[in-house]
Image (cartoon, rainbow, N blue to C red; front, side, top):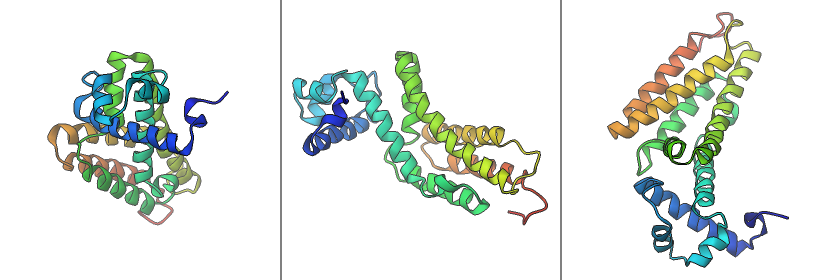
Length: 209
């Protein structure tokens, strides 16, 4: 038996998607704890029965749908570079795409990181589910650095897994500071520093990045 999402008609899927997108913006403004089901119904112009038709698990299910929606938005903004990351140029292009995306958003910071922070304290099980999205994002960076290593663009002694964690930590830290400073500059500085650190691990026998 399929999930509610897979069993919906095209019209129903569109309505569900509209609710997710609208509530995602609402939660960015008010936070998970500050957004009630009544708030969601009012903002999305849906009845209680309609809301539970699309989200039988209530607010928790809706929050998980929002996390998946936000993650896909963030990943799509980094493509095609995120799927490559196999040359120094592709890493620079990825950096530029990340800065362009977050610099264009009406709300500072990362919606996935923000959801994770909120949910780990309020609902650990939900928080763990959102952390899986961050792990997936980190995995793209890890895969890219393994490709760089396999192509001998990184020094043979370089550790792709450790370097990926370094870049991802810089990314998330930069996003946090961007949120508190309400400026894109911390993110730019964090990513530039992370890429400079990566270049120190370039294989000297290949062309310098």
